[in-house]
Length: 554
Image (cartoon, rainbow, N blue to C red; front, side, top):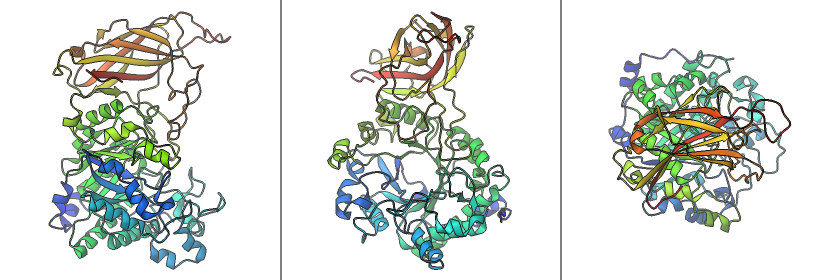
């Protein structure tokens, strides 16, 4: 039966009632240039398929590279045996239920290794902070060789603990006290057994965690859960005589938090969190909105997911990473978090017969962690795109706020797009950077012309490439859900329009810029390569500001 949690105490009273370790605030204030949410077993090779000693040499290569700006690794490895369910819960169940706590998707090569202990030891040995990243609503992993429709026996035994939603087995319902209890019990078990510096509760992957349509009504249940986790970690902190911090991964804005039932303002008022990870696959993160509502006490870390990426930007060139990170730093981020990035160069993955990540990730780990290392480097400032995120029923991860794709008016009326630039181009050395605005358009035919203005000033006519190709744009087909299409081959029949306009740097504002786009000429009102008589409507797929410094090219 669904029961809301108890009514919270007044925020300031509750916050002042906690007894923190003397070193707690210093731990909160620790430098975190780059935090790695490390899903180490999500791909191949993984700890589950390697000897422990081999993996130690493999899994940290990017973090061991010279000038690495990684300061924290937050291990996100729920499929590690024993990582999901508390021992006490499994002990009270039958053999099938016990098996649910020991699920893994592949046979474990080094089954005798305590992988969580290895993660902690190897991270600390490098002088890095180590958290456990706890996905509160993870999908169910099958034991090796099990049929795909094998039910989770604990869920099968407790259907009243679940939300019927996109995942066929149902997702855990935090409005149920028993669900909150076993989740908190697992946090306690991990905190007592391992030397973690903190825990991150992941509310982003996956949702819902409350019954759909009642999320904000039942928000106190999630607040009560966070209160129980905070109390548990402070008890373990006192017993171990060391600070243990608490973070939460939440949607890109407070508006989306409200839609999904996360009363983040109350959490901060009550002192329930030390830091927040903002979003995962959104470039446009409402850092300023969070800061205005929450004040300076909580640390804010926007997240770059390069698998379930911002739509049409999976595995982008490093200039995109630089542009996004620069924007976040300027908007007040305390650091950058990465998710679904690789841990070693592509050639190392090739030795294991698998395809590694792009070299842009390796470079970004040396650059995006500070404003100083981003200065003077070429950047691309993109405008956010909408795009599906199938692992959710709710607002988180959907990017429904995004401005693109954008259909242009038939009658020449301008359509406006806001583009954020974090580079002060008026201060950049003259003659050492080129600035251009680039538009990718679907549905165009040779001879179509566009008028483009930046902050009210008409740009030069620009270069028109009517045979442009972009493997991340699927129009006229539906754009696929995020994740898994980063290596798509270019369609030789694809014809997009790329418009490139030179920009006077003095016309670019530090912060928000308005791009106005209108159709001035349509070479043919119909689709030139089809027999359709439907009037063509041009659609803007991408808007990017490219800032290229001497000696670099995008």
